[in-house]
Length: 156
Image (cartoon, rainbow, N blue to C red; front, side, top):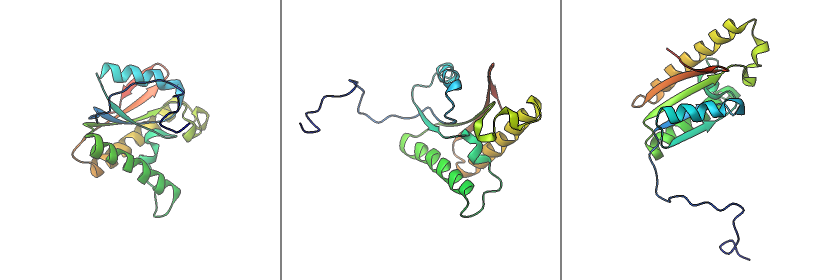
């Protein structure tokens, strides 16, 4: 049987037309917060999003110590290229950067002396990531959010 004759594993119909993304969301792949992300998208009335899912989410974009040739520089460049591709291919109108409590990329909550210190680190990293992306992609609105176990918080 040829590939054109093969039976699908899952039947699914979708429109073949290209779409415009309401947002490009940079998010961690921690599944504990997936329902929160879906609820946020619905509240924002997003029809289409481009989701960049990487360990630590926006953490890679906050890396101040990214030196030429380092793994942190490569990770930052990769995430930034995904954002730029979303803007280029799908005309993403907004870039949303997210971090969440107890993130394994940070060593989890146990890596911090207390919840306040953890929240302060995430807030500082979200500001740094937002500033970096605004500089690199100046024509698109960039927002930052922190997900905790009781909700999603806008980062000022």
